Image 1 (cartoon, rainbow, N blue to C red):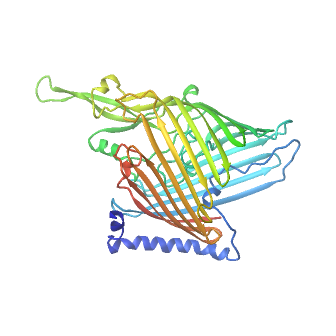
Image 2: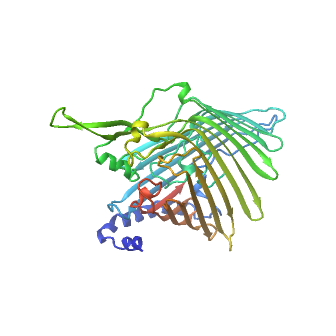
Image 3: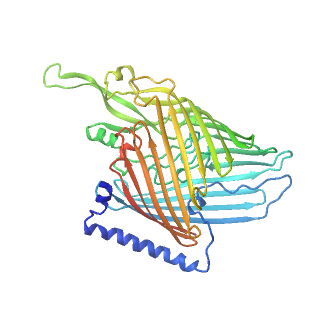
Length: 488
């Protein structure tokens, strides 16, 4: 109720910018509407067009492909209106471009992205080559398909919806937290890639990457900057990025995926070793004394963290997944065991003496994740899609002085309804952790007035937990957004 009251308690002058934004987006949508007034295609899903891999083509023995070219893009301007913090309009704009060229048995693919946003302390413009690779399809006997690629490519591992324990290879852009879906947050890794599909439904996907690419995290002072770190900086602490010299041994990564049918189900096994794209936090400087006016001109204090550093640890993960259909339901399971590279913070804020034992404020542990999910189309009535996922994360070698819980349970639930030939879409999704009770809710209503245009109105709400919890740290970051999507 407090959220609803705050929404309608805006001062009149604050509506000028949102109204201007609506008019601007409406004008953007008007042109494609006129161009496409001759007809619409049913079930056109804009959110997936620029997030999936290049369409697969069989490379059968002695088969030649004709020339084929494709160029498409999506422009997504967005306006955010914070509900709790200062009511300044935030602008988040994204341009995605996809280029493909198929010439006989060779494919050249490029996926480009440009961002302009004002969610940071200063306005920012960024560009990223998400993918750029050359792929050769070979004709080899006794195989259904075989391809070799070199360049920068995105890997999509796991079968979960947004929560995928084994999907740790490709870096993600987390500067806007979970505003964009997981596949849309991904960017590629540079390397060599080999895909082979054999008779009987068996396939192998393997890669070697000589260079490390890190995930993007929110900058200090940005909209999703962690409040805990902001408070640490306000108290005089320093936040650093740990820069290490590049070496083949430290930065190269290698992974393999083996897929196979299993009693009518689709199953896969995974193994990956490399530097974790998602950064972790450690203590990089500890002080044990402060200046004093009296001899010996210093005073001893309990160990206190003076600087924290983001760093990327070498990690090793094995896992598997399975998916099968049973009537109108689709069931899936996924598990991952990280036996190297998971660094957990110790509770040095609660017990400063732990910094004497753990000068970096961290201890390496193992981590096991398990996900179980189910979804169904046409639940209760036509065009209602439902998805539910249950996730468990445990630390087998947990110690009482660690910040992380030894056993954490969470879930996600999604409801999506479409009507009028998919022109109208209503969407709700929740992520929640049971022990800390922190959660994120996303609601969204979209309308497709034309074949190549979508207008979305939605909101993100956060509640529960503390500043140390994944969603709880953003309890005062609720916002309403208006987004247009123009496909060309």
